[in-house]
Length: 87
Image (cartoon, rainbow, N blue to C red; front, side, top):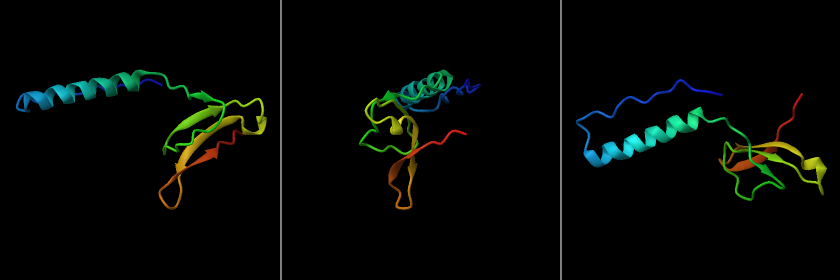
């Protein structure tokens, strides 16, 4: 995946400290958008469920858990892991 995102320059009227912070953040966003995403490969699901996270599980002891998992928001606003079913 590649992105055509390019941040506009921070206006000159912005405070110097804030401008430096914004420039660093915008540069980090540009770099992240240009990077190819690869899901982290783990042996088991993380205890911490971060909504929007995607991981690849490879577990030799529990092969039924192998596959891609995504953390989605359940009805109470808490993240829970769901196995993605590939067709």
